Image (cartoon, rainbow, N blue to C red):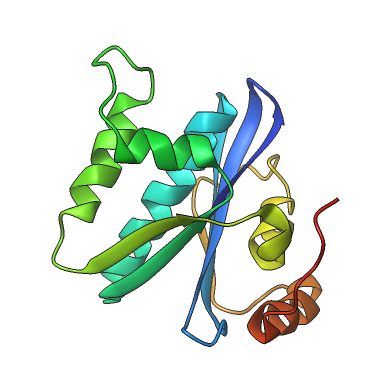
Length: 154
């Protein structure tokens, strides 16, 4: 799952994809948020991805996020005045469901598909959309992600 944005704050959306244990595509999703911060875009990507996984019946989930800020915000207490508290609390509620759900950090370079899918555009104005098949530009990155081929960080 990943947020996508132009400016911070700026025009934002979220993207994500669900893959099986061999990194094969299950479903992709995206949505348009409007004007917001990168943190909220990343949190909404996480919330929508987890909710979609639950609705689809997945009960063992490893969520990869390239945002350490999101991971820290979800894992730790925060002030009741935090501007993203409502989304953070929704994510924490999802974590209480009867499933195994772990949120881990993944460098952007280690998750090429999600990064490319997120870059598909923060300007798409559809509030919610599912992609049952991968975009053609994701076929090679899906294969590379599945092979666990390592790429150096710039």
